Amino acid sequence: MRTGNKFLGLTALIVSSLLATAASAGDFPADFAADPAAVNMTQQPKVVVNSGLLEWQPFQRDLTHWPSLSYEDKRPTPKPRLVKLEEPLNGDPVRGQQLAMARDKGYCIVCHELPGEVWPGTVGALLLKFKQHNYPNELVFQQIFDSRAFNPISVMPPYGTFGILNEQEIRDLVAYLQSLE
Image: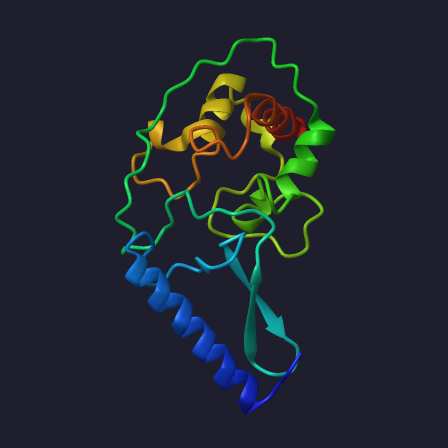
């Protein structure tokens, strides 16, 4: 790994090249973190220790076929979906916790505060002691499946509609949240 001005110049060249390629491709907005030439196009920044620089690396999962939060992202999105949860829930709270922390699945901790996480997100609702709210399973399931059914301008990813999580994984997340005392 290189550091210093040469690395900064190389990084700027690569990022601008990526952005230009994405912009010319017409598929992605100019500020989209993607490398169309890579097998896994989605890129994530990694801090280069003690340098003040970022290094772009492939993310674990290609997310480029889902819309981003970029104002420039004009790609069509699936319409919000209202779903009905068939009880019993039959979710596994242990698996739900793993999904909530998994970078390639739920990754709920990016936006929400959950027990045991030292660097929680602050954008989403506080999920500590979730059980005390007594939300029905069906409401929580829908919120995770596609929150746009309740709030058309929600920034929460529609995990079910976009196929990020399958039905059982959402059931596991619901079971996990409902277990938080």
